[in-house]
Length: 376
Image 1 (cartoon, rainbow, N blue to C red):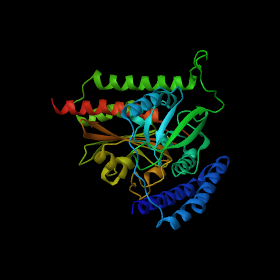
Image 2: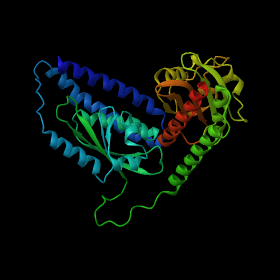
Image 3: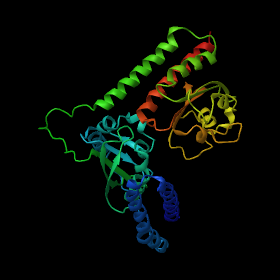
Image 4: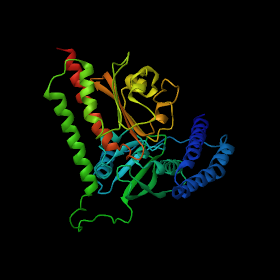
């Protein structure tokens, strides 16, 4: 029975990856060979693994995992964390289970933030389907793989990803160890000289985020607001323009009320009035954020109705030409105070994981301001 269930999971994973590969047909022509390679790997998997496995189902047996010494496990965990190379441990869906110190520095994402999130989400959009497919291939025992990907924060830098399978003791599923290195980089050694020169573009983006955090804190503390709507409007004006083309603020949780909409002055296809008249409860992204209290980061949103429709029954994301979005709940002590949604449109660079982290921090500051206002 256990093997039958595992076979069913493998088959469901295969069907989902095929759907992702179909969706990847829209990537630029230069990226299509990578997608084609991934599709060929999936076909090989069906011919070489799934069909023989189906024929062997009645004959295969299972074995119980052996126990290991706790001290040895602790030693291995310590070695993992202290490795000088960026290393992540993921499952077959690329969800991060562990990210070492070097990996956190290399990706620019805190280990605690990365854990539980797909590693593919930190990559450029065109690389995600191939990375997920290769990770799944390694997890099911098709051998080690390597491919070149690009981090979402630094899309111009090619990164060499090496994937190998691990079977943690006492666990029924195979994990995947992912090692990341800049393409052409050498393994660091004790004799190496000073570290690499910091990337000027990355440093500039980090400084811009620090300025934005400072501006938000200043706006919230300089002059106390008298209403919750005023708090949201003040926060929205800090974010508008410099951080997002559109800022939409909804107050409440169980009953959402739209308080602020700021958009680009030169927008022709859709006006702020179209979003102001919209019912927030008709926006699936907003409702989900208010209900679950989790941030949504999407690049090239696949569902055109994710932010609902306007009065003309046209999808808002299509009319506003949204290329990336952040939908962030304003949460304090588990209670949602409201939701802020940010759009970037046209050719503007998509939201990065680092920007999502910064927005997550600002959302807590805004939520605290809303809660403190209620206590006056």
